[in-house]
Structures are given as structure tokens and as C-alpha cells.
Length: 132
Image (cartoon, rainbow, N blue to C red; front, side, top):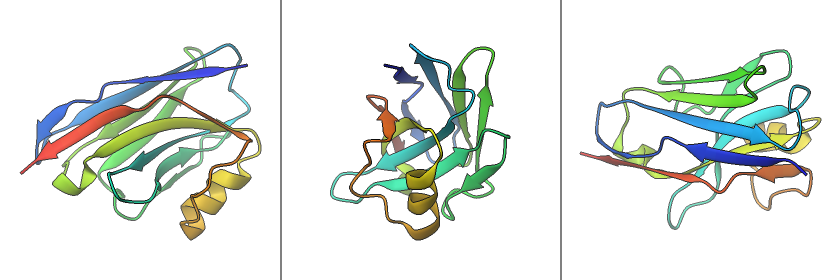
């Protein structure tokens, strides 16, 4: 079974930038939808950005124009470039993968992100904290 491991989370000032990485191991995720999701204390899980097998991307409204998702299939790594960070971006950020993408699309398009699905593989998360 595949595993996902995030890194890059940190504490930054508002307006700053961070780059998150997610290294996949145990299987090749070339055919999988990959994505970033986040959850702040007391709030529901939120879709941040997903990238399809063909490179098509989809972003949550709150991060459009500030965040960029990308994938390197050779390195089996997913990235999230975050710019112009705001205090409301503070959350635990999770990398995830899903073959077929049905749960991913439901979460991103309808905000229906809970519960998760058995079809989704999750990383352990990396904390991003943005101070004003």
C-alpha cells in the first residue's frame, strides 16, 4: 500500500510564502488524482487544490491566485506553492491521492469533504501557521 509524507509546514508572517512537498512511496501515483486539503481547529476539512492525471488543476475559492499545485511524476512528488499567506490559511495541511477522483471532485465542487472515503490515501499532515 502506498504512503504519502508531507513536509514544508512552518510558522510565517502574513504576506509570506511557503512551499509544501508530499513524497509518495510504495506505489506509483501517476494515474491518481493528487491534492491538498486542510483543516483548522474547530472547522471542517476544506479542499485547497487538486491536480488530475492530465495536469488539470482545480482550486478552492479562498486560495485562487495565491496557491499553485504541481506534481513531478518522475520524483513521485506533489507540491503546493503558497504565496500571500493570510492568518486564515492557518491549518493542518494534508496531501491525498485518489484513483478516479470522485471524492476529490465532490469535496472541491460541493464542499462535501466529510467523511473521507476508503478510496482516498492520506498523509500525516504538516502544520502551517500564519501570524498577523
